Length: 141
Image (cartoon, rainbow, N blue to C red; front, side, top):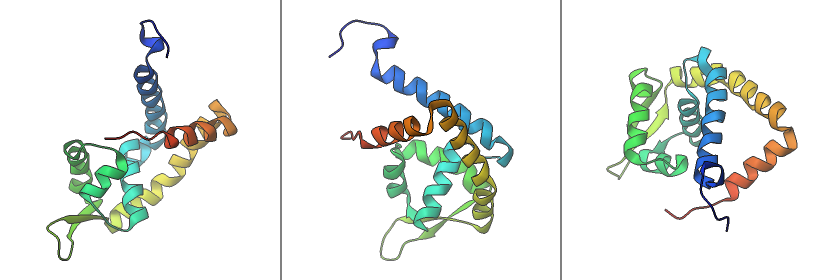
């Protein structure tokens, strides 16, 4: 274990700083679509699943439910997503509207450009290794 003090020795500081920098890169690329990186990710997860309950989306995104609800508000207001009742459950499922699918389709090349920009910066192999390492780290909630 590393001993000492200072932000350069803090795992949380390093990860959050990197995450903010990477989010900024994606936000810049996605700006013309009207979506933030977080909104794009939410739409992409919903699209991949077809529909998904809010609880499952929160788990998939590793977000607190209240934080996710705040993030969903603008997407619902813009009519990019809609809630649909789930049979035999009290939960609602989220699904993309036609406008949401169109916006996601419009933003996909911008997202791809952000992916490529990151890979140019980090190198494609290193970028893939970083992604795989980050995804492999599991934390108990």
